[in-house]
Image (cartoon, rainbow, N blue to C red):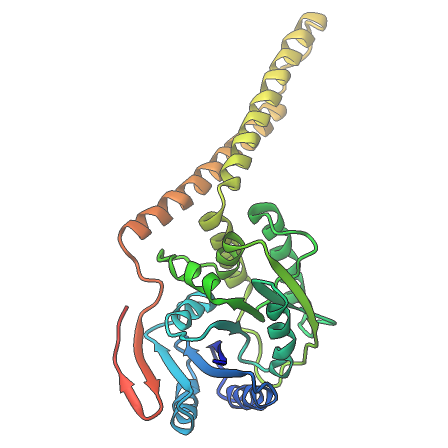
Length: 318
């Protein structure tokens, strides 16, 4: 019976001190799972340290490891997409480069796939992120439920496994703003969780700043949901309704109390509120139009400078 191949895809950024131990943990874990073959795809997202030099050395030691070097920093989800294009296996597994996601528990994810799930996300017993990251995760979860229809009881993380057909569906997406979670949710609803551990960061700190988190959330709901536009429409209807009712109230009040002074402060407040809402809605519509413009100009998801496999190297752009 032919063994299934598990393809590990790991986006790497400032991980020169940790990626070697992550790869070693994967190799040790897969030795305990003889029913599977594996490959490891490491994507360097233009890290400013010597991450790709470490990746190159790992590739030279093991021809099952493929190194992808991006020409500039495109972000985690674009780096994942770059890795997906190199996948040859039957099962995709994605995890982090910092050692916080337990590679030695990959058997739990593979077992859940074997039981019939299409996608398996790791659920952590206790997250070892700082308060900022935990807050960001909660906001992201709320956004996924509201905008993308994620079930409330489904935990989403960066550590997941998926069947090949889900990967093929994700690869069909060629626009410049990939959002892997959105791609998974639109491919299948047969998604389950398995509980794994979560570790403290061994070195460095998270690359996600508030700006990057906001950009990620905005990318998620503007690329995969029209609900923001519907919310804008409802808010517009609501503001118009409030303005109409307030106008009737003002006319009636003037008839009942003729000496009532005209409210300059109330007028200015109403103008500022309505003007602010209009600017917000126009900005949202502009964001959608701008993304359409960028996609029409065929902006790339990523640009590959170099791919290394074993002692071989080839240059590629795409």
